[in-house]
Length: 330
Image 1 (cartoon, one colour):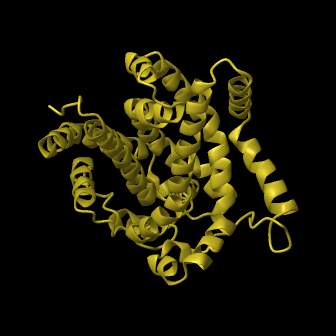
Image 2: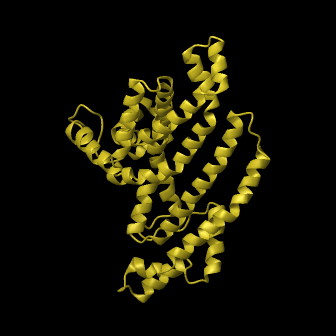
Image 3: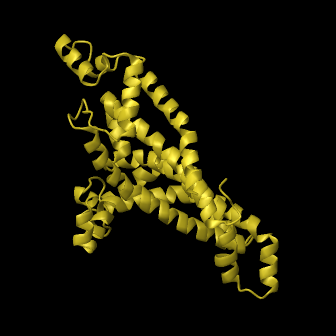
């Protein structure tokens, strides 16, 4: 398995280098220093920023220097806007994003798979039709509408300090990004998480469930027609055992595919949530850097997002072999 992982990493090195090349070239179509400082900038400030980030050197030298920095995890370059090392920005942004994306991914997958099993078992009956109708309705509403309505009713009307719900419309407690806070007082940490991250996760789960439920239902319905299901029923296996042991186990390949494909898009999709709920995650950091013409942050964050996508694809293939012995990595 490890030899396969190494080979896949080697195969994707040219892809990753090409992505970095395209990102760097596209960001230099217009002068990034002029875009950041404006047309009325002094020559001294222009040269200072240009030399600080190495933009006065040939492009090929900049390219290899940036690749080396990324490979060696050297994020010491300074943000033009915030005057902080990019490594610090990433270290602060990743935990904040994880506080939304990881719970949303786990909860969405668990509920959607369960609903898919129920719908396949009661296929064509009223419960199946009702759940699928709700799934289609959920898919038909814009993500932005969910955010606005959720903030108004769950945060403004019934949430906050004086409401019956523990949700706040905006804000983020930086203690949530520290492991010591969770280990020191778990109940306080969970309450704090519910206050600042519970509503964004709830909205993310509701939006994603419509798409995932229809997909998992189609997978489970296809599995119900397999020979092993007929054999299990003939042997007297209970419906619960058929659903949660035989069917679920044999459907793990498409389930893993769906979950792992959703991960990069979930990170990108959290941009709206982070912006509207004032959560200092990766998406909000990237959007803020784009608006502020903060060239170094945009360059490094784009490379980081590309690495997440490539590693997700490799991890998906590895998980295939872990859950299904018929799959061999060769």
